[in-house]
Image: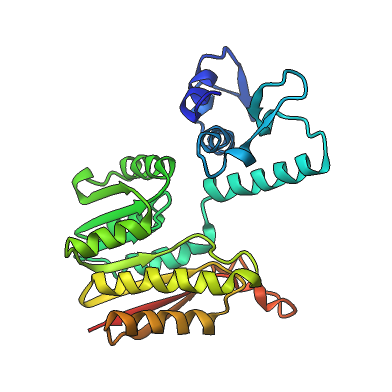
Length: 289
């Protein structure tokens, strides 16, 4: 099965004529209105080679008996259909722009001037780019996805930022935070924006342990007078519980931290009074003397 790069390269070899709004598009593969859809399909190939998602992203063709990308498969059962829906949701998560954080990125960026910044779970670098634009001295961006970091590097180039102001590290975030701790590395501003840890109420206890672990390590890496912008997008964890988890993390890290700001989702993600769980994104800005 081809890789994501091979898929995109195969499109470039096609002699396809593409017109949009009456105009011919010469480089349609990289056109800003077309490329997001291409990225999503490319992600199906990338995830098909990832052991964590292989079962979801691939299936056996009912025509050839060979393993194929599930995106190309005509579902043959209810289970097939469910997996395809889950696959599409996963691709949306892996390729989306996360506009719910747009205003929060701008707020954090304004706090970054002159600071050494760690952006953990950086994805394609939304917070990193905002911090660089805000005058950060240097940004270290960490994510487990090589594809996301490729997008981050491309965004750095598009933004005209000097490459030596940013470091991209592809690693498990928890392991990398521990490596930073063991190396006695520290930062002035840390952003924790992890993926959803609790898919449902049944996962809340496990998710809280994961949030506390990440925040405890972040507090240990924070220099005196530093700031921690920490987030949770788990709707099953309400703001009060999240604040309790972060408080416990600070206590275990031996930091007397204070909440100096709060975050939630952008205004274009309104919350119905009849469904308070719609306030899924919550965040805290903590200062630690």
